[in-house]
Image (cartoon, rainbow, N blue to C red; front, top):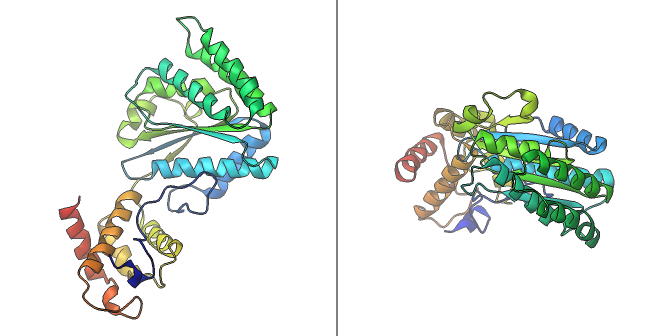
Length: 311
């Protein structure tokens, strides 16, 4: 594709993961207050307690991106507050088919400890080895509460060595696993983020009290302003030639009638850019050549084509 006609080497709407500690690449399009989130995490760090978040949403709604943003923000705030950059361990677990809460909790604890030990030799020789030995000595009928006690002691020792940790458990499959993971770290310092598929939210969280859930962030299709912010943000961040080639009102109107999640919007926009360049026979560049722009009619036509061909 001749992306250079827009001043870039690749499609501006290709998804890109957020690196830990990099909050500048997150798109502020989700229904959450960034200042409130930052205040909540700062308080947890300052008070030496734990922070707990649950993110629910349909496929493509940005659960993983929001989880990564929260982790990145925690990392940045920890470094800023403690002046100890690089002293936060990050562990993430994808659902692997295991629906046994006790087994998942044990896997999470061991995985988290494995990341903590990488920070430095003191954490390897101290809290990691003690945790490993305590887990080995567990009786065959150990409970999640036994693991909770080990996790609590582990987190206290990690923090005493000026370190912390974040833990993301993606696509929690059922209530048993959710409760086990929450119980595992409920008395521990650090950050825990769980993500749930929206269709399973009621089955997993429906009977729980708010204090048993933590802070919940619910993701859905983008509103009109969110659609424009994401479109504009990705274009500007890619250093593509200004202005954005999409008519602002036309884009808002078209996607208002065809709403989509963050992931689906990016896929649709990437499809539009590729379709425009594939069918472009001129020699111009954006913004001087009007043929490289998108008016509302073209946006609607390409949405329809995307939904027919790709969706």
